[in-house]
Amino acid sequence: MEFTVKSGTPEKQRTACVVVGVFEPRRSSAVAERLDEVTGGYISNLIRRGDLEGKLGQTLLLHNVPNTLCDRVLLIGCGRERELNEVNYRKIIAKAASTLNDIGAMEAVCYLSELTIKGRDISWNLRQAVETVEDALYRFDQLKSKKDAARRPLRRLVLSVPRRRDLTAGEEAARIGQAVAHGIKLAKDLGNLPGNICTPGYLADQARDLAKAHKSVKVDVLEREDMRKLGMGALLAVARGTHEPPKLIVAQHRGGKKDEAPVVLVGKGVTFDSGGISIKPAAAMDEMKYDMCGAASVLGALSAIAEMGLPLNVVGVIPATENLPGGSAIKPGDIVTSLSGQTIEILNTDAEGRMILCDALTYSERFKPSVVIDIATLTGACVIALGKHASGLLSNHSPLTHDLLNAGKASGDRAWELPLWDEYQEQIKSPFADMANVGGREGGTITAACFLSRYTKKFHWAHLDIAGTAWVSGENKGATGRPVPLLTQYLLDRAAELEKTKRAV
Ligand code: BES
Ligand code: MN
Ligand code: ZN
Image (cartoon, rainbow, N blue to C red; front, side):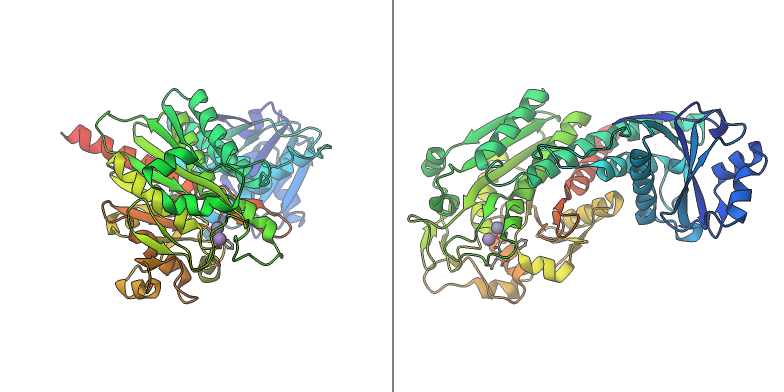
């Protein structure tokens, strides 16, 4: 999709379609009113007759609108003006995008970007519009032999800004929106690819492709033998059950000063989680191809910031493996030694995510990070606690918690904090090793984070449990690309903050 930003009156647009909003009950938006004036009351007439109530997501397509230069006008219901918030704005834009795609308007001029959302500026509107349109038109059909894509898909969208002096900020926002959208698309594609294609080796190749595409990105891949030499006993333990070679992918975006401490993003890359010897039930087990969505979000965020050229140092660390049962697989009761030297009693081979993450977290120490954020589809318990709307957030540093929660709010990719109190640590005591890899049913998301907290004592750290947010099940099954929006927003905020302190010096 190609996006451009423009300011100008709707009747003068020589385009296949002009898109404007109508509020409920039957109330024109500012742009619709303008169009109504030049058309001699054409729009208000239709609305008065009851053709469009203005309910959120309603649409009405008009042909041959008098005194306009466009082929068609698409009216979109925006709901009640008072209730126009971030979530509804996104719904309105998504509806416009899918309608334009269906009606064969290959290009259009959209005025919905001029709607006023409380507490948000034109830059936010434009960026969200770009991300939402790309999200709404996303299809994963690369593995279908016959594609049922639209015959005349939407290719070019002009987003309108109210004043000429909004153009510069608007264009910059659209550019950032596109970079984020590309990162989201990468994360979705990787998530949706099946386990027989998206293997640890495939993830490594994707990281290498990023390095080829962007000068700022460098990639290093550690093989099984490298991990053995380092002593990554926990990661290697999980990888014992499969013939697929495990990888530890290290991808760096060097956009900041050489000596500037990086943000390290650690992403769980289990390309298929059968549970191992503690095997999962068959129902919906196919969804465990999504168990690498943490890894995908790290690559997506790196792609986004590399495309933006963000002046920041960011390291992505991705432990990648399958979790399968097999003759050499780990068994309940096995005890292994992690890279940190701490020993782990494996009571459940299905708690594999924390095992591969703990070695990747210890490995992250070598980058002398300013903060470390791990992202993982870690626990079914998180889906029970928060559902599919918020990612779980647990951290050992409250300023970092605060920054991540804010980035989630601004990007519409929200997280919610859960406690990481010492009392919960009791649950992962083991009589035979330094810790057990599970802590019972109660507070499963928290005890998983407690496990990780034992490997993150040397730095500021936050953990995002994305088990509920990384993909949706049911009719519209597919990866969401979350939390790429949250992560990139956090990195953008951080770069802006750094810039401010530099200027102050
Ligand atoms: N990848 C799963 C978590 C998961 C399950 C995410 C379902 C999304 C939907 C993880 O490896 C796992 O199996 N966790 C176990 C932990 C348990 C054994 C302590 C779980 O949540 O059941
Ligand atoms: Mn598991
Ligand atoms: Zn898993």
